[in-house]
Length: 172
Image 1 (cartoon, one colour):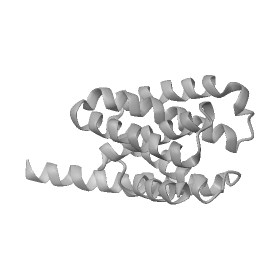
Image 2: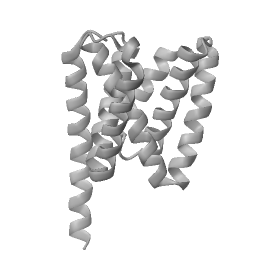
Image 3: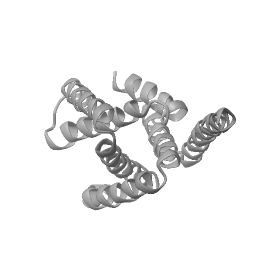
Image 4: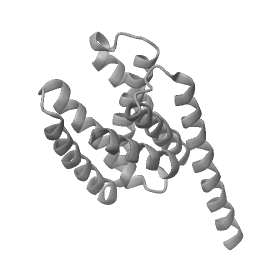
């Protein structure tokens, strides 16, 4: 079940993370809720999925009504998740440094979102989508596939952003 959820979320984030901002924020909440339940409370997969869905729904609501706060939270959570995934792919022992890696990634994520909103959302959602797909299909040791997926997500979403920008310029 988790593999299917990761594959669907990963694919959608890779292709439309910026347009479906609330889903990007919800996905960050889902992954965080799932990981916390699994790692710190040793919950079953079913319980972890339920907690992830509840946290994701809360984050989606936050994204809709409190966009600025949700952007910061999503940037932090996604940045932490991405840095942990990349550190694991590179062979680092993330168990002993999990919180430090997560916090550093979170700070980077918040800074990216704060200064470069559209491109940060595109980059973070592409990274998160690629990480979810790599996990779903158990390709953790395959860095080139991860990078190809990230690049594809950035190109697809970046092209969409530029098209929207040009349309707005022509309307003005």
